[in-house]
Image (cartoon, rainbow, N blue to C red; front, side, top):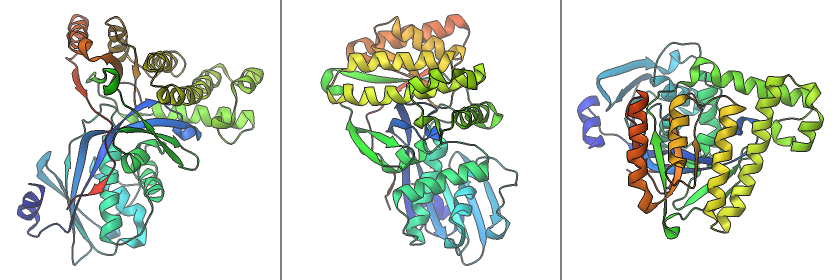
Length: 376
């Protein structure tokens, strides 16, 4: 369908079609830009991109979600200082490839990852485009190189100071596993995540409280973490132990200490979760998720009423544990349940949201899925 839509829209057939997934981060939140360890997995929801070269320098972009719009610009006009909307994620990737892109492009995307839900729709878009361009222009970049390129596009072109996690998992994920990622050197280990064999399921609760990371809250927290690391004399908070943090408390402002306490402890929680997953101890994993949520709520201060209500109601309805995920200030939460408890929990969460006067939440589940790929 994407191929035929592309041909109708642009009058030529696409040369390549790619896909890239959104993600759920099981544990390790707001630690990627601190060179920490994270453990996300790719979800089945994906963004697709169809691309063809042009014989001029023009760039034309459209989306199946906005079929009436065709955005037009030129390779010669790409600028991080420019104005724009969602198309800037695509333009940023083209810009980051620099001289590798030698001709104009026609691009049609089909976004299947929920926007503003904390599932990294932006990285799915970036990585579907990056995968296509890497193949179309024979750039030969490795997956870690592509991840850094897509991150640079979001940091420098779009203006979101995100870490490397979302792009890495969208490119490197394997079905059936979570990705243990060292955000410093991008080394990875696939950690089996087999909830089904334990009779469990991971529920994703989209609170539909829309979050936007360009509004400053994300950048402020990253700046606090970087300031804390500088005062502690370490390259990044990943290099700070819990003991060092406590002994150096006087060097930090109270806010910096709070932010750093979350980061240092959440990195440790990632390592603990790896060990429990290898033992299939999901009860202990659930407890860690709940601790992480409390830390994000109280120390990092990026939760919101909808996220807290989702997690609290899940825990009150037989969840093994849960937490908010993503950048914060809205988006989604996750919770682990026995399969038999899923439907009653959904009903309880929906009812709680109704009583609170919140928008009705959406629920979905996903097994760990595969990363970006060329599909046509």
